[in-house]
Image: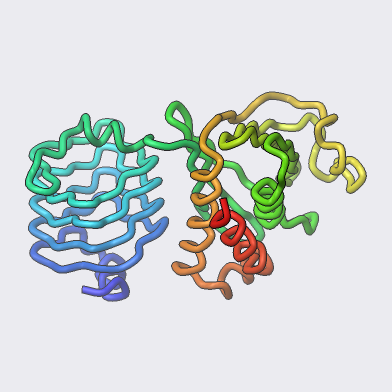
Length: 280
């Protein structure tokens, strides 16, 4: 069953699926409270909403559950060869009898592989002038939003900053960003120290429309209300997660949808960043 046909069944209210073959990309889709039994599934569920969804006796080889919400979901006697669960959320999960390559795939293994590298980055939603991303660590995941109401392209600026950090001969480099809300503002501080990156996202005391262009050149001077998120991790890993997230959203929604809801898709910046990270 292809993705389009499956979505049609969901819209008709079907909740249980037995003995089906399913393939497709279900990035950021709402697939909550479903039941899959004896199914063969090859799918990308990155960022999908899967609470209280049941997978029982399913073949889930190579499926991707990264950044997905699997709260109170159930995995029983499933085949999980090469299945990925990076930064997934799974409180109160039922996870028993599963296997990978004919060996036991326990809850302990799931815990170990979920946060092998840090930090994580995922584009959650782009809609009507709002851009929403998730920054993920082991202890906390934070949703950071940007509005285009002032005409600033915050995601593009993030890519440009990462390009500068990749291309710089300086092993210690610091950059600042401002993501506009309505009316607030998130102030990002990114510091690369060799192969490590430190990310701090704070809530500014001033509203975004009060931080003019001249002030944005000196964001390090901006007064901060509180720290929303901070993390340290591998620079290359984070950069690749950012690249992959933009490429996933392009594949799932297309450049036209991106530009209808936000602005010009940053193809040049992505190409530049891919080139820079390959040289490292």
